[in-house]
Length: 256
Length: 304
Image (cartoon, rainbow over all chains, first blue to last red; front, side, top):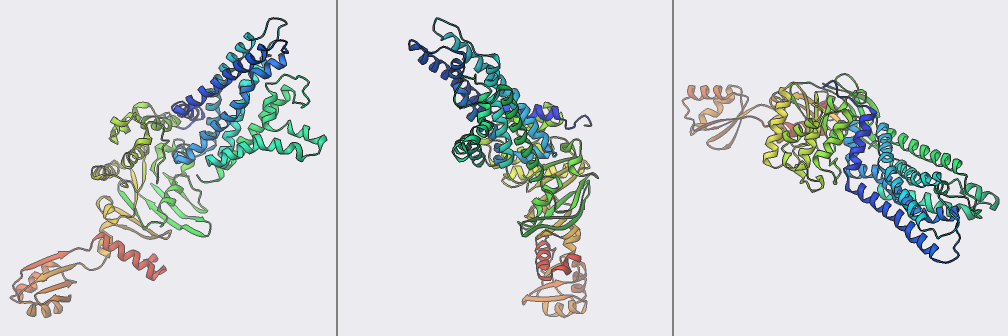
């Protein structure tokens, strides 16, 4: 009996097991793969069917990973449900009784989320990339940079982690999804007109969703300036750490 | 062993638990009794670290629950309400808890068998009846083979078989030397299993007594006596020091004398007895007297 004790690897294994024993996990990951690959095929096929379509790495990357924008929203909700589902069902009491320090549970969920979701998004993005490149018309070549591929696979997982943090902060599924949608979609749309013109672009490109998109974009001289890929990764990482840390503090201090 | 010292918890303006102190000893079943809203569940949640006390502290086996390296082995708790994701099977649910401690799958199978859930172990918990959910809750409480078992209203929703199972289980756990704390608002249920009682009302401790002692404290035992010679017997019993009421001409209700003494007094007075029935005060009456008394006399009874 003395061999039994709580350790972080064990909590992470437990959370991984909990995640993969839910049907909804596989349903969500399947849907995201279908959306990623399906939109990449449909959009590239449409664009390149037209004669004289522009062929560039930037355009190809944007067309191939357009579906990732949708996946970012879906996985965000997935991250939220990983923890608000436990508050809703009351399971969180059993979980915290087993791991009364609580914070390791949140970190273990984050680890489990990355280990389960990232291989799935990466696989879907690789298939999307292969399909996109195969649909290119004959002529000058174009390709998707490897860093955009990994960015496209990682960005939705990072937003899922932000969702997990918001879920730990807000606890109620509907409220957490509302907060997530407001932060991701409404906030940037409001900031743009609300801020002085010379400031707006500088601020808006640092919001989570814009920084996440910059991780899988190739600069095309678009009028809306995106963050450089390296800065984008750091910005998204900062948002992720900040949200999870806030969630961890809340879990410690508020009774379930 | 559970030790609770000056435990206090407020929810806004209301005090759920108000300076509660008690010790729960191993080797016996301790019933935790009180009307709904008396603070039983909140106290149990504080013992296992789910609620933070506003003042005071609770220790299990000499240390706060949170500091145990293997909390599930220190305390197994069944708390109020469901604590299961509907989409997972009973076995998956228990494995999710077991893995945090490195508890092997064969222990999960063992507690499923103990709870009588082996046949439904691989069914989704969302389809479980209230009784099956309670059994799953008990199974998860026993997962770590804990030294202390805390069960909040465990018979809720159980069928008669389940109630009998819980009673036997509680006695077995105590006989194995474990500390067993079981809450209930039903005195009749607690009377069957508990050896010792903690009675609370409005977040305060009203009594910390053995079951036998509480019954004894509930007031004098009564005997119902039926006799055609009641006219002669009545004054004789009063002379012997009893308090006697006479609901019917041939019937006496005697307090303050044992049945043996009444029989002897009857023989001495050549009174024929048709009936001599001792009535012990029930635990239910004792409980009602106690909580009623507390409400009426406030602090005085708490000190008693």
